[in-house]
Length: 394
Image (cartoon, rainbow, N blue to C red; front, side, top):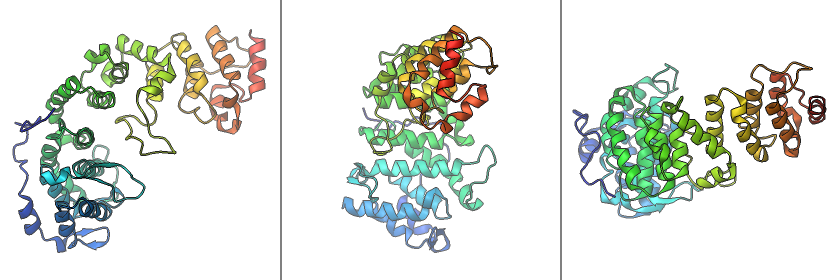
């Protein structure tokens, strides 16, 4: 699967041609620009070293470059020309050299091209911060504006790698393209980029890649309904999460069916853990676990707790006092949408769910962690009190 000379945004990129990298280095007055540590006259050397023949030199160049022109994801006057230069060299064969990260906490080994694409995505994400809301990003306004001004040609360079032969390159290209297409002035490229990604969905056999792709397409507001019948249950579930599938009864059923087997959902895709945060990159468009994202969607898209009961009971064996914000807390709120009044009769569905929770020991450790959820509903945040309530309303 190779892209060769194809570009998903051809015809929409007039005026977005990339400059010659040598001219960019020579014609930029780097001494007048700044990064996190002062004048940026050392930046051209770091950029040129990215094309060194020795992978170790390349890695050692990207690390300090990252810490200076994108320090803690902040933008500086040197960031825009540095990002533009990196975009111009993405096609250089020397960026295919594989090496480990400069940073000791990141032991991934991947092509430099993947690392550069990830870096460009971080630049784009920083530039997009507050763009639609007007929130302050903490950067010098000139630095932010300069990066935003070159997102078009950078986007051209990035999207040209969405179907690259190396899966690590494809993954980081997708992440960078997603960050770039947050820009209001690039929104017109979403449709044609989606068409391009549909080809990836059809050709790829990698579950994680296909799931990440459909999550991205869905987040862009594009139609994912045709994937609700995909042979892969993980892809079906990710397609169902798309905002465009809200109100689609088939999509809701896909989510409910998946959640009946929470352990199976957790087995679909490896996820980062606190012990090993670099095991894989997180899924795009999702904060936390896929299972919790599916549960949140199920709660949002159902009107009657009876519809959720089987899912709620299936989730209880995976609940604890530490997960209440992601699973059984929202389920409690869904079970008691109008709260609970002392002395009121429990519905059979409420009774069954509370009984399952009362039997789950780890949900009741350190009750101060769960108290606010119960108080908001009007229930006692005490296991014995809940058991007594269950006996009274048997």
